[in-house]
Length: 315
Image (cartoon, rainbow, N blue to C red; front, side, top):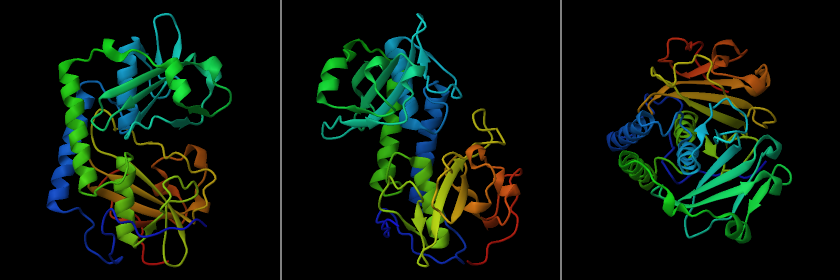
């Protein structure tokens, strides 16, 4: 087991009998500001999901290369040009001019070009790369200084509507507030907030290694937990009752914790279940909280199609 430790990004000390796991009033206001900023990007057609950095990158690349953005269900292809060339698009926020980037899980035979968009912390584009798929050998591609020099594009020709530029900068400022006030610790915003709620509810310790593949947190008894979070509320973009829960295969966790949060990131439900009892982990979705053997409720459900079920008492 890899070493886990108490995180310093937010105070997680509590007991399982606590009455609330909400943020402070100031934190809640900042989360609402962030929700409003992300809704503005949605309204402008910049994003369609909560994969904020990736979707802003896709928007920028589609504008720059004049691509038609593909539906989210299209595997390995994010955009296609008028000549039929297919693009996969990746995005990364960089600091200290560190543009090194290991991109994994590529299927280069399914696209013609890999486009990589680099942003500063305000989501201003710094570089855009266009890499032919013929130069990508295998599922992993490492971007180095020489790769950048060879495939860097001239972004002086990039033109964005002023409303979009202002909205993206507003979004970046709202994100900075969350980070500065230690509400989140990465750009996995929804995941970070769900982990906060789960750790505070069960007094768990998050793994210090953000890239830990087997589990997200552990407790003092050595039990391991995978934490999955989905933002669920009534809107045009999240009305499905079969929201997927990805990446459950090959986990070392003893338990899965599922957290739902509402539009302004308040916890709207939480469940815990033995990982071994999850049927069809490759195709798991939120409905497993209603059907998995041994599931227990940690926070009562505010979503009518997700049952509260039996209350969790102890391990």
